[in-house]
Image (tube, rainbow, N blue to C red):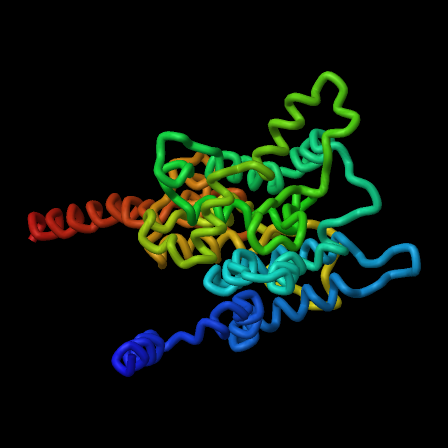
Length: 331
């Protein structure tokens, strides 16, 4: 009996884990605390929280366009090691799951008085080239594949998570539909009511979010820490971004209502190269790398490739050698 008790004591001390504490730990709260320890994450998170919580009038609870822009800046400019932990943290209780659902301030960025038809919402998204490319990325990287172990294309969880996060801050912003700690269901704020003869297409589009095994498995694997060796790190969603006019973010009070496309392209593409991420073969990603390997002459529309410089120098070098030879012959 004494030996049995001693063995049990050794087992619990040896693991270093308290079953009671482990069961009650709030990983989403831990993720928020980790963000606050990083200056950039804390600054941009505080900014979007302030903007998305700012009531405009008794009838208008916030400025959704500014809220969306602040969210895009947060997810574009803060490393995924912080943003993913907040978005995809695993939960054991409802309080944790509710904190996870509240990450993007859904009362401003997500919810509305009524749910529009999903096909109408998709149509609005497709009128914006950046929203359209983000949605296309999501369908490409999160489509259910029954020929892989994880149900994700090429077993790449990271590409799916990045594409999901890339839609936050647009009309197609997705979020958790409830505070269930176990059942993970995400969806845009829309329904298929009033679809008419397009109801089947609408339901299929909505199921890409609500009943997507690739997305669900990717979120669960990240939260459980089991996605580390599943596949090589894939490029994140920013690979399809277009260049912006503005150079620096205006935070928090100077955010314009326009959707500007800026330094996030360079940030994203360089992060893909710096982290050695395996790029997909999408057309948008090729455009991204092309943009990084060209220079634009200020004040003109001419584009110069990096290798074009040395090639231009070759004729002048040849003329120099020819002149020296002629001089020697003359002497």
